[in-house]
Length: 334
Image 1 (cartoon, helix red, strand yellow):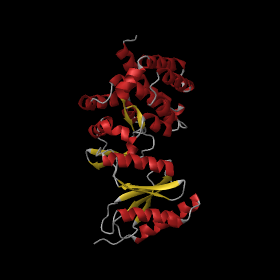
Image 2: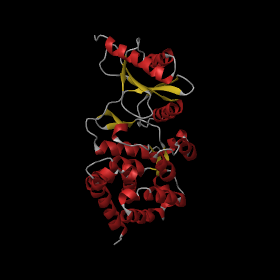
Image 3: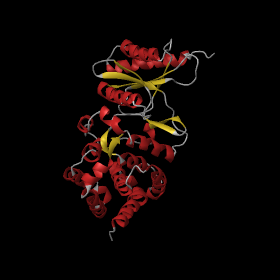
Image 4: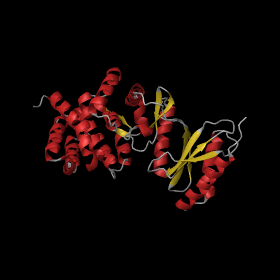
């Protein structure tokens, strides 16, 4: 029999008081919300650990333990009520339809009108991020079938993703936009804003390549339309088992071009385009969830998201130029 870790819980209670002071709320309100989650887990005591797993929208995070296990049973996080409700809706939708896309929801508790605590089953980080498991997860997202309308309509979900940051602007104005003229207007502004870093010649090449897809945008959109996580990266993918991955941070999801998630995921790899293309091709042959040319185009868009002057030479050499040359060959351009 394990002993309860009193020091760990004491530190968690101190964190509750610190967070409550910062948010100007009574500590009892937050403790009650955390206690409700423990009650749903049939835990007889409030055995907590304060943690920080990152995330700009998280105001505080706590792990729930049984007195008889070293492994956490659940994770609770304090965040804006609107975001907590949105994540909880996705979790309950996934679980009730047996889609295996997320952790299992435990409960959602209001702390104030503006803050809520979302609790879900604990998931661990994979030892290695296996391409096969990543593409399997993307395949499950791509094939939600008749369940997708139960999550919300295209317009409802899109309206909830306010375009007030660079990534949310891409999701709102490009990934979920079926109108080619509006997508073109956004992309032109997006690429030109990065011309001081890229240079005029490279920016013009990217705009020219983009036009190939924009000229057939509506058909591509209809072909690719599906569930999009929006922030599909390693930090937001955890594991139930070695080959079964699930999504967290469910704040940007909407309906749009599903290849965006894989393009965004692979854009984070420092090894560059040639390396990621081999991984993408190998798994996409099995799962066939993305058009390869569109994937590469969106990969370029994702790489441009946070390109910085001090890293531009490496990014251009390893990521952008090889991807641009690939698309030129694919499109039959000189």
